Length: 356
Image (cartoon, rainbow, N blue to C red; front, side, top):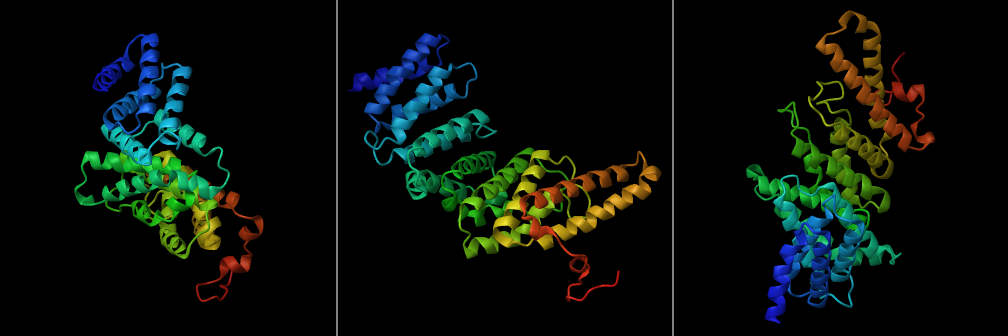
């Protein structure tokens, strides 16, 4: 057995061989070893790391990628072959891999994970069965995310990377276990608060906020909203609305260097929150209407006078963002919910109607 083990460890180095034939042979032999010895952590972990490296390599053949997908499926989800702790080891392996890269998981790895989970759950039409199968993944990754929040004021690069990797994994899993992830949204929403002391947003922070927004948008349509989640998202609604226009207030100063993908994710998220949780369409739409119309009126009157000035550009960009956020809300809500009468729009906080 020790001889076979040493051979398997030696074959790991051949997975990166320049020759496609040698790579394919090494992958085939290693896969048989892993499938027949799923409890052998050292070789399985080394092989898994190398296999995933190949999956994310653009020049790898489709047949080899399919073979690797089959290996992981049998190793981690075929209960007839794998031990009960296989999914736990799988999570550890993916976390280790993602922590090695400053950019966490890239698109190729995310696509591979999505294909793996889709295959694992494709024959299980019952949502409860799918959630049970992926419960070890969800639980371990959530715990890893929560542990990355300890001592958040002194975040290291490794901690930030692990947090981002965990969120990306959870976003993929949200398509399969929305309830389990949705019940933990309260741990994600603090990242949605704008920092008023900083005008610009750094790329890693922007990516993290975007993933949180995408997770919320993904889980809400597929779950029954508990009271605790409704309370959490009602409090976060204003933060999400600010992100949809990305200003300190709807009529405030525009943030610089704002990623467009973040603003787009916020528009989708605020629509999902209003549609599925708070139903507070009037509170969200009215500020957008009021400030949107105000900015458009300003542009009509002042644009010719301010042409070329920095302030004119700010108003143009904010007006565009407000209009797009409003459009996202209107598109997501039932028509009878968004038609507000003139009297409703003119009502003061005390319920009386202001003269027009």
